[in-house]
Length: 291
Ligand SMILES: Nc1ncnc2c1ncn2[C@@H]1O[C@H](COP(=O)(O)OP(=O)(O)OP(=O)(O)O)[C@@H](O)[C@H]1O
Image 1 (cartoon, rainbow, N blue to C red):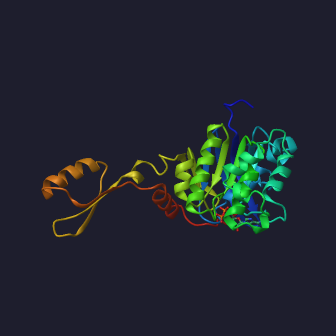
Image 2: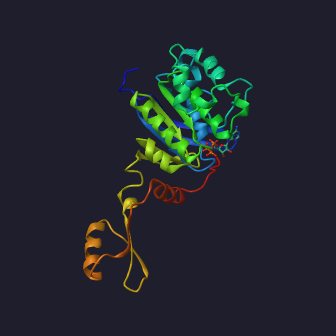
């Protein structure tokens, strides 16, 4: 596999559970070193897609290549090149954080330094604590540590920061940026749209098993979805709002018209969350049943 070939290549992927088309013809690529976010409401098909890419679930149709291999035929060597943080934590053991990480590091040919990984996820104080005694958010950090201990080329992060406090989430972002700078390719799912905007190069939005939008984070939704709103209070104190592609010109005209600084002036650009909600509202709901 050369660096120019996509690390992940998905074509017309389909997965049915009985009559339910959980994934109904999804196609996307993830390039080397890219962070790609798969976004969508509960039950949209994100975890099903990711689990197929990880080799944990069979597909009903379509083509999939991950690091040049079909996940249905990926052996141990291939698995060792992946880092996986599943949606729900399996970590509740009676061993300490340090013991668990040392144990898992032994499975990989070129693992990261265990102490460095513990520090990177902010668990230095808890290294000698049994995992069963950790809080939910701290256990989630252990999951993340186990996902990166093997120095993966491709890291799957399925809702990695659920249960993190705001400070831990920011620290996690720093860690992900560092992994990205080292060249790690990352597939992320998250319901925190600010997290997706902070970390990802591109995103795909999936609803009812279909990809309804895909593109660079700063282009998702197209130009019209990104038109800013200008808010101010008029001379009678009434709140006014106008959408305009030229907020600067509007503000200048307001200053002239109001003969000074407009009260409560705000120029608001739609966030990824605003754009996502608009797209998902238009894109229909969760379940698409086979005819
Ligand atoms: N093993 C299964 N058997 C039957 N249906 C399933 C199975 N796993 C998932 N589904 C269904 O497939 C659809 C997609 O589920 P999936 O877990 O991929 O969604 P998701 O986008 O990851 O959702 P969330 O954001 O809640 O994690 C849902 O309707 C779900 O109920």
